[in-house]
Length: 215
Image (cartoon, rainbow, N blue to C red; front, side, top):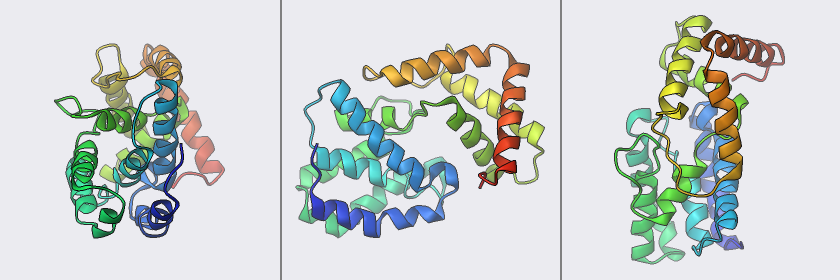
């Protein structure tokens, strides 16, 4: 799907650098991942959507995470809505839909997203690799509690992942997503044994530290 080149250049030059303010789990690598996954979902489900809107929603969805992680979806949507440059590329109604999709993207949100665009970014925002879960839950836990021991962070991570991705977890399916379904089976199998999960995360984090890849 073709993205407007002028829009893409604006976002890459002016929005992407803002993600340096976020911790790594919500940094630019994550944003590029969500963009890629969004278009994978569109393709796999043959969805009829505006690719420029999909790209913009994914690009802005976590921009306010460093300000307040607990309400980052509202902050990010507000930042996007105040960006007057976007009016060059979208109608007023399209900008409203983009704002709502960013507001609705959080997996733990009580209500389902209001549009297909919100469902796309919410689905794309989920991890689909176990290793990513092991890293992100550790780094984010460390940000929340810098004084916590690794063992305390591993225990927290286990509880977080069970609550989100376990058999009764709150993360929802909105589309056919082969990668996510495979990931979910693998992660749920690991979560069946708490000690095995913690040992797996411990070994992975130790390797990242040794390779100087944990930031």
